[in-house]
Amino acid sequence: MSLNPRIDSFAGRRVWVIGASYGIGAEIARELLARGARVALSARKRDLLAQVAGDAHDALIAELDITDRESIGRAARAIEARWGGYDLALIVAGTHLAMRAQTWDLASAKQLLDVNLIGVLNCLDAIIPTLLQQRSGGVGIVSSMAGYFGLPKSLIYGASKAALINLAESLYGDLHPDGISVYLINPGFVDTPLTQKNDFSMPALMTADAAARATLDGIAAGRFEIHYPKRFTAWFKLLRMLPYRLQFAAVRRVTGL
Ligand SMILES: NC(=O)c1ccc[n+]([C@@H]2O[C@H](COP(=O)([O-])OP(=O)(O)OC[C@H]3O[C@@H](n4cnc5c(N)ncnc54)[C@H](OP(=O)(O)O)[C@@H]3O)[C@@H](O)[C@H]2O)c1
Image (cartoon, rainbow, N blue to C red; front, side, top):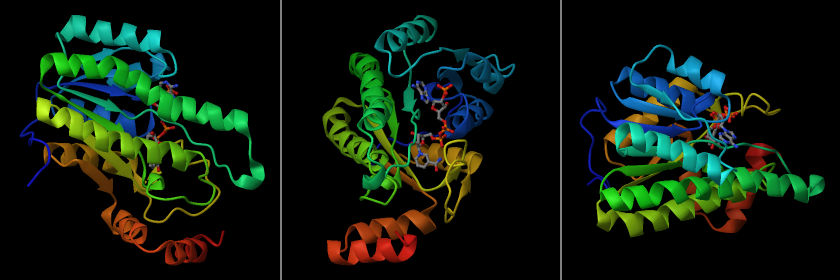
């Protein structure tokens, strides 16, 4: 049985995509427009948001920086003034920085957490009161399979994503009884500007448009956790259940790190 209500069609749904200027979020916005949704596109780069929106009449651009609460408030007010609320907010924005204990850098660690964790909280600060007031709609948070357990080169990124997994689980418990859907999206490797910096081979790499379709299909099916590609993430889920001795050995064997 699905943990959230199913969505038969996105046509006419009002969806706010935060992190929609490129990468997975841009493809989600494009796919939503193709499925007939009304889409508010947010991120910092207005020109790229406009390119993603194209000439869609149902698109609205609400520029923001998720590390800046005031800019999120302005964007939220603009969307609510235009639409009177929204049916779904997807927090996709995030960043990545490879770090190991040997390259420890506190300033970079704090910067990453400021975007990937505090930035999401800043967005929720605007979204939760609106959803509670509406007593309808939903919120989705993009975490990562890197949040399942500690991986090499993922020292702070993994910690930020583990926090989001825990956050989404608690949010579900709090908001579901009030009729609000919560989605946790855990992608594997997706080909975007974020991963194009990686210097290692990425198993089961997906295209961003396939990731967008998998995200929206999972939401439409009413899933709580949406993870993909399953042939990769299923292994991670299995590995997560193993005793640490076996888990550490398997990670070392696969990554060589
Ligand atoms: N790609 C993967 O393999 C993968 C795997 C697992 C999880 N994820 C997660 O999926 C999400 C999207 O990843 P992606 O690969 O699509 O990344 P990406 O290609 O780097 O795109 C990141 C998006 O986030 C926006 N963004 C970044 N910092 C922002 C800020 N301070 N304020 C507002 N928007 C901001 C960017 O727009 P602006 O620069 O215009 O602001 C852009 O739209 C991230 O949370 C990432 O951690 C990705």
